[in-house]
Length: 251
Image 1: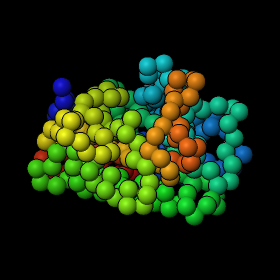
Image 2: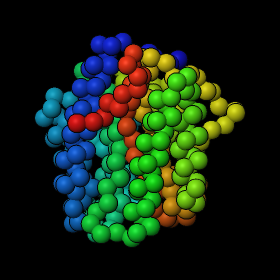
Image 3: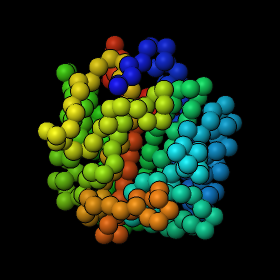
Image 4: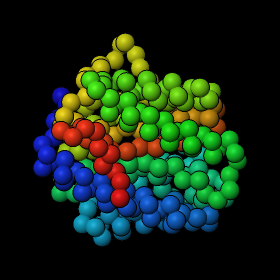
């Protein structure tokens, strides 16, 4: 069942999203070569707790950290570690959410660390633009959920990239994950509800430089590309309000 939020609930979700966006903004200058993904996770934890929030991902279905931190060929759900050291040229995807008194945000950004290959930078640019186009599709009059995935897929595949199919966006706001699922492609076999006032959605293209196929590592969490080529991931939380679609994960 899709949970439609009240104006008051969206107000509180917005507050959670603003804190998350502020954290992402600070991470863009905090992350640098030589630090571990554990260092990044600790920074996120302290920031969230310092803003009177609770890390939404920590212990969710057993996940052991505040943030999913995925590097290069890791698509999503990378587990932070003191042994995983950031290097110049890495693509570092940070995906996290905040529980602010029962109101949840969700956001992801792929950060380019220093100078990287042109093809990696292009992948990030296209993935970020895919998110923009997905949000624009959701904003259209009488839009449906699959309009989002159709916009993402059509744009990303023009560049020969693989659009991840095994994982998708989702509803959010009063829990970490809610209905509906929001795939980054369209199919006649999937539900396609109309986007309505009160919906809060986490839209998140996951785009691979090579194949769309992925696998899960032995830790039962980290998803990697099947061919070992890099992946990029961008995500925003948006709300359908009486005044139209609003991106909530902004400072």
